[in-house]
Image (cartoon, helix red, strand yellow):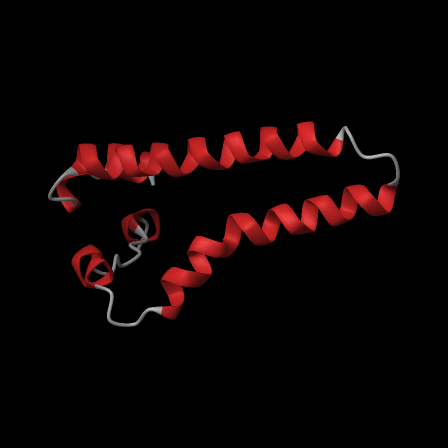
Length: 93
């Protein structure tokens, strides 16, 4: 998202906000993975490490599952839908 906001700022009404939103998502995933690695290092056997990874994955995916369950959320309508453009293929035709 950050690269898309940098390369195509004209497709956003607020490209700085789109970039910041991508940065927040990236940094939260990075911090979550660091915390997960620190947590797994305290485990004594493989089964406990795998259980820790799976439990942490469920916790990280909880907001996504919640957002997908709400159909009438006003934020979804405000974001809109982005269409994929294959500019490179169109140039060679």
